[in-house]
Amino acid sequence: MNSTTEEYSYNDADSSYEDILKLHTEDTHPEHCREAACIITAILNVIIFLLGITGNGAVIWIAGFKVKKSVNTTWYLSLALSDFLFCSTIPFIIVRTVINHWIFGLVMCKFTSFAMFLNMYSSIFILIVISVDRCVTVKFPVWAQNRRTVTKASAVVVLVWLMSAFLSIPAFRFREIHISPTNAIQCVNKYEHHHTTIVLIRFICGFLIPFLSICICYSILICKLRVNQLSKSTKPYKIMTLLITIFFLCWLPYHIVSIIELNQSKHGHNLDIAQQVTATLASSNSFLNPFLYAFMAKDLKKKLCSFLSKIESAIDEETRSAFRGTSITNSGDHRFSTAV
Image (cartoon, rainbow, N blue to C red; front, side, top):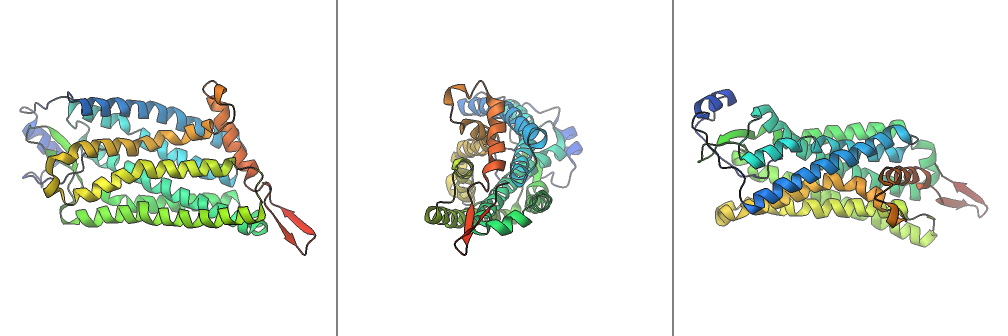
């Protein structure tokens, strides 16, 4: 993800990346990272990469191979895969930040941007799916017990990834190579007259509609649980609440700055630092999720020493307590348990 989201125009628009590189290599002397904001951004990205690869790799291993496959582990495995994919592209961004020069070619320029928004859309869509899934298991427990299967969950995940990839196409399509005034090759967005449309679609589909959908689902869920006192374990709901809260705190500033940028002529160069900060904050969401699983454990003193076991415990509890205590009474006598 390139933290700079400005639009550029250049005379070499019809040239290939190789032609641009050939024309400018000899005279390219970009200024390396010296400003405090640049150095801090690079350091934070290194931390995000290391923690993101380690944490999400652990979740993928545990959810994919260590615990029993279930609908819940399918959701969290998808989240971890999305975050892991994005974190794997961060080294390219670190190098670009440090040397202030894009050396990885046009394809990787496009792919890193695509991976960022694929991660954004797939993460929020899975959070919506989980929220709806929670509502269904509470309001229709018997139906959920009979129809809620890993195969169907996997099909939903595939659909989510296809939708996310489709909405991320503009990030690939409009990412281009640009020669800066200092003769450095930069990987930037060249939206032209599509800029407003793309930013608004991202905000509406990647933030506003998901936020409203999740709020509605959780309002229904909380009311149902309070009235019937169905849930004995609140940990799964605490984990989901934290996942959703962290996602919106990480991504809301990015969307705000993107919308402000639409009127950049009034703000000029002042948005550069804001773009770097909010883009890095958005990236941080990719390493926070697995740590939420571990830190939700009760034994706070041992969480650093038993990180992997706590992730496994949190994910496994999702499987065991999704339906635990969820019951309905039929004709006053028949109680149905929907424990998975």
